[in-house]
Length: 490
Ligand code: NAD
Image (tube, rainbow, N blue to C red):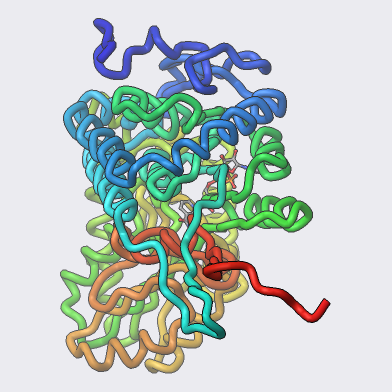
C-alpha cells in the first residue's frame, strides 16, 4: 500500500497525469476538473489525445496474454480486493463523486455500493465454465471455448461515471481482456482515477488497465486503434452512432448502451400515493440525468388530476442546491449548455399548450423540480430525452392507448407499469418495446445480475451485466483435436 496524507485517493500521485501503465504526463496537457455546483477547481488530470491512446493500446496488448493466462482464481482475487478497497474507502471516494458530478450523498453511495457489487459479480465470472464439448462429426474431439477478445476499449459518460465505467471494465478484466478506458473529461476522477487507484492498490499487473481521460477525439482514436478489439460505449445516441460507424469501418465488435425516453404507465387502479412517489423518484433522482430516468409519465385520464396534484406537491418539496454543503434533493445540472437545453424543451412544451405546474426555472445550474401536464406528441418534451428534472405527464383513455404512446418513442430502454392488478400490468408490459420492463416499479433500476441494454435508438441489442457479460466480453473458439493427423484426397 502506498497512501499519502491525502487519503486513499492520494491526489499527489495522479494530479495532472493519466494512467498509462503507471501515472504519467500525457501528450495533450491537462484538464481542470470543476465542481458543477460552483465552478471550483477540484483537481487536474492528464488530457489524452490520439498519441496517448495509441501508446496505451499497445501496452495493453502487450500485457493481455499473460493476464489471460493467469489463474482465474488470481484474477478473481484481484477484482475482489478492488471491490473491498472501494467499499472500505467509500466515504472518502463518495465525497469526490458528490463534488465532481453534483450528486446528492445517496446517489454517490449508490455508485460506491453498486460499483463494488459489479466488481464482485465480475470476479465470479472468472471462475465460470468457459466451454462446451460438441457432438462429434468424426473420431476427433471437438469443443468450443470462450476466449477473451484482447484489448477492450471502454468509453463512459458523466452521469453515473463510476458504475457505468466499472461495469464494463471489471467484466472485461475478469474474463482475461486488458482495458483502455476513456472516461468523460468532465468526470475523470469518479469515472477513471478512482478505478485506476483501486485496481492499482489491489495488485492488478502493470499494463492491464489504462485510464486515458479525453474528449471525443480520444474516443474516436480508441475506436480506430488496431490494437483494440472491442469497444464498450455508454453515452448518447449521437455519440453511439458515431462510435458504431467507426467500429464498423474497422470491423470491430461494439457494444452500445445509449439513451432513453422511458415511460412509466400508471393505471387507474394504482395506489396514487405510491405511484406519485415512484414517478418522483424515477424523474428527479440525480436531476433526471439518468439514461433510464422516467421520461414520460403516462396516466389514465381518470386519475390524472389526483396523481398530478400529488406529484406537484412532491416537486415543490424537493430543494435544489449544492449537495456538498446543503441538505438538498437535487444537485446541479452538469453544464450550462445542458441547463439551456432543458429550458428550451420546457419552453417548447408550454408554447405548444402544456401546463407548467411546478418549477420551470433555474438558479445558475440548479434546475427546479418541474412538472408539465398535457404533454403530447409533437412537443420536444414528449419526444426527446431531457436529462433534466422534468416530469412530463401525458394521459391515455385505454390500456391500448398507453401501449401505443409508450411505444411511439424511437428509444427502447426501460419502462414501468404500476397497477393494483399485476396481471393487467403484465399484459401491458408484454407489449412494450424495451430492454428493461419493471412491473409495479418506476424505470430507474439497474444492477450487476441483470442483462441491461436497449432496443431501437437505445443501443444495438447488446447487453451488459448478469449472464450477458460472458457473451459480450469473450468470443467462441472452436477447437478440434485428432489423435494424429490423417491424409486427405489431395
Ligand atoms: P456523450 O455521448 O456525449 O458522451 C459519452 C462519452 O462518449 C464521453 O466519454 C464522451 O467523451 C465520448 N464521446 C462523445 N463523442 C464521441 C465520439 N464521436 N467518439 C468517441 N467517443 C465519444 O453522452 P453524454 O451526453 O455526455 O451522456 C449522457 C448520455 O448517455 C445520455 O443520452 C444517456 O441516456 C446516455 N447513457 C446511457 C446509459 C446506458 O446504460 N444505456 C447510461 C448512462 C448514460
